[in-house]
Length: 410
Image 1: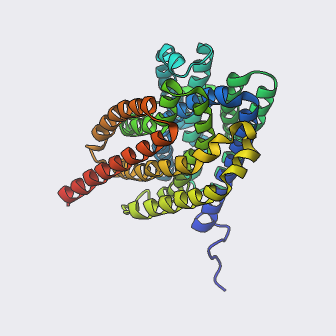
Image 2: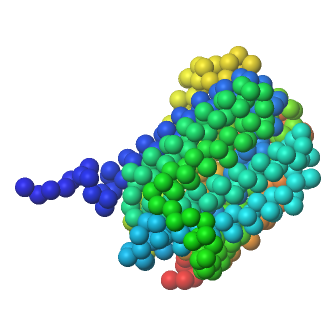
C-alpha cells in the first residue's frame, strides 16, 4: 500500500503543515481576543483607544518581517547541512542589529509619537521600541522553522506567544499598569516565543557575537522596508488619524472593530507563508487566488457581523462598547481593500517592481490629508466609507502599475 496522503506525518506534507500554521494562528488569535476583551473592559474606550492606536502603529513596522522570515527560510534551505543550532547561532547577530536599528528609529521619533497618540510619557514609546525589536527577532527565528518545513513547532511557537501575551497582559492590567501593562505584554509574549526556540538549541551569546553579519539579508530587509513600511502606515492610518483628530471615544470604538478588521488582514498571510516556503525556488503567479481568498474572508465576516455584531461586541467588551457594533460591519468592509492591497504589495516585492514604493509613499501622503479632513468634517461612519472608497482607488492604481510593468517585462 502506498504511504502518505494529504495528512501524513512528513514535513513535506502541505495539508498537514497548513493545518499546523492555522492552528498556531488560531491560538494566537484567541489569545488576542481574550486579552483585548479584558483590556477593553478594564481600560475603557478612551484608554483602550490610546493603547490600540499606538499598538497598530507599531505593527506597521512588522510588515517587512515577513520578507525577513522568508530570507532566513531561504538561507536555511540553501544550507541544509547546518544544524538547527548552527543556523540559530549564524543569523542571530544579523537579526539583533536590524531590530536595534528599527527600535532606535522609533526612539528618535518619541516626542512626536507621544504627542500624536497622547501617551502619558516616553516610557510607553520605549516599550514600543522593545516590542518592535523582539517581534523582528522572533519573526527571523521562525524563518528557520519555515526553511525546515517544521510547521509543527512553528504552530506551537505562534500559539505560545499569543497565550503568554494574553496571560501577561491580563495580569499587568489587573495590577493597575493600564496602557503600559497592555504594551509590555507583547514584549513578554515575544520573549516567551524566543525562549522556546532557544530551548531547541542555543550555543550562548558569545558564539552569536563571534559570527559575521549576513549583509545580503540586511540589504534585502531594508530594501523591502521601502515598500512594506508605507503600506503598514496606510494600514494603521485610520486609527492614528481618529486618535489624533477625532473623538476620543470613537478611537476606542474603532479599536474594538480593528480587532476583527486587522486580524482578517493578518489571516491572509498565514496561507501565503506556507505557500512561499514551498515555492522558494520557483516562480509562480499566485496573485489572483490570494485576492479571491481575501475577498471571501472579508465579505463573509461582514455578513456575519451584520447579524451577530452586537452579540460579539457585548460578549467581548461589554455595554460600554455597544456603539462599536454599529460600526463593525462598515469597518470590516472598509478594511477589505487593505487586504487586497496586501496581496498586490507582496506580489510587487516578489517581482521587484520598482514603481511600487513611489506609489505607496504618494498614497500615504495623500491619504493623511484626506483622512484628516474627513474625520474633521464628517461622522465616523462617513469617514469609514470615504476611507474604503479611497483605498479601492489605490488598489486600482497599484494593479494598473503591476499590469503595465508585467507587460513591459514580457
